[in-house]
Length: 102
Image (cartoon, rainbow, N blue to C red; front, top):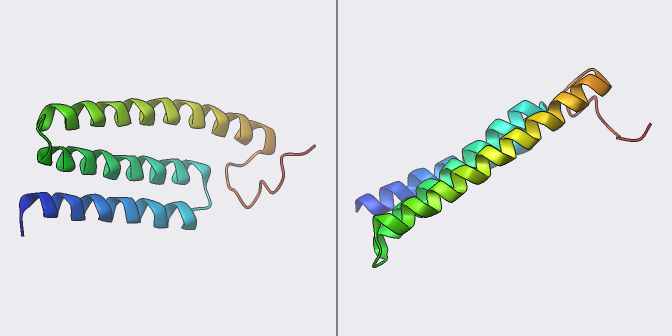
């Protein structure tokens, strides 16, 4: 088994763990952490798959930097939304927040 295959398997495990956690978590912060885990798995997969191209590591690293930038922007926005929801509803659990109507 090649190193590329091992990296892709680890990336798939990260992606599956994040997807499982996203469906099972009830806290908005826990869901955010699971989405970040999924994005890290995608970044690892991009770096591993880039070894098959002519540009090799450069293309993969640029793609992963793009994914990391998206993850940072997403984390900032979601944390701001979580703070607003927690202040308004008094909780950040999804079971307590059933509707966003007044």
